[in-house]
Length: 66
Image 1 (cartoon, rainbow, N blue to C red):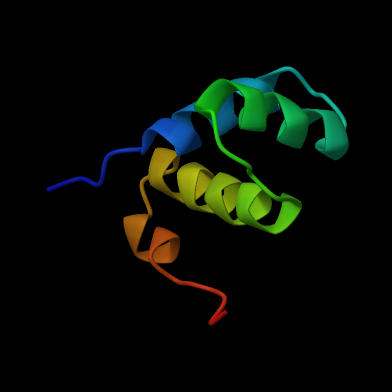
Image 2 (cartoon, rainbow, N blue to C red; image 1 turned 90 degrees about the vertical axis):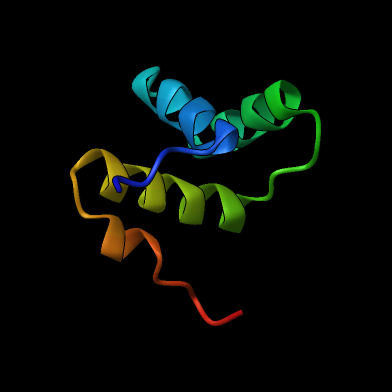
């Protein structure tokens, strides 16, 4: 069963298409989801979403160990 994007991941992919600087992208994601999204979480979720979109969900399950 293919892994589906979470709401946060879908929002991040849409924001990523805008080509905004990271700081602005994180702020916009925070506004859209309604809770604080830090830079590290934004980057981790973006990497996971890109892996899922590319058809490599096994890469999306790898964490940073934090």
